[in-house]
Length: 137
Picture: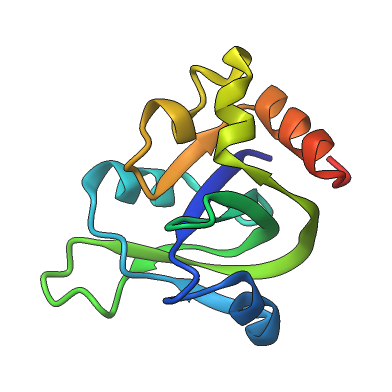
């Protein structure tokens, strides 16, 4: 199993929206590196759900339930989407400020590639962020 982080503006698609929907397509990604990350996701991979914008925090965990397929919102046919389902909220949201405050995370994609909407998460970073947020790793 691999680990990832996806970002969403809460005003566009929030954790509450994710929980209500239970499962959704993760579409609308229009960056080539993020597209490659979506293509690398496998069924069963776990993903941090991150609120961008003003909140800037990991607020939940989702799971990939369908691997990459063409994004029907992309008229060019270039980009892909995956399907994810809600797994659990982060008991205590883990802020970007808290992650950045620990120099150990300097190589984490959320810090290193701050504008990228889909980033891989190393096993050790996954465990550490789960611990910070009180979630079971």
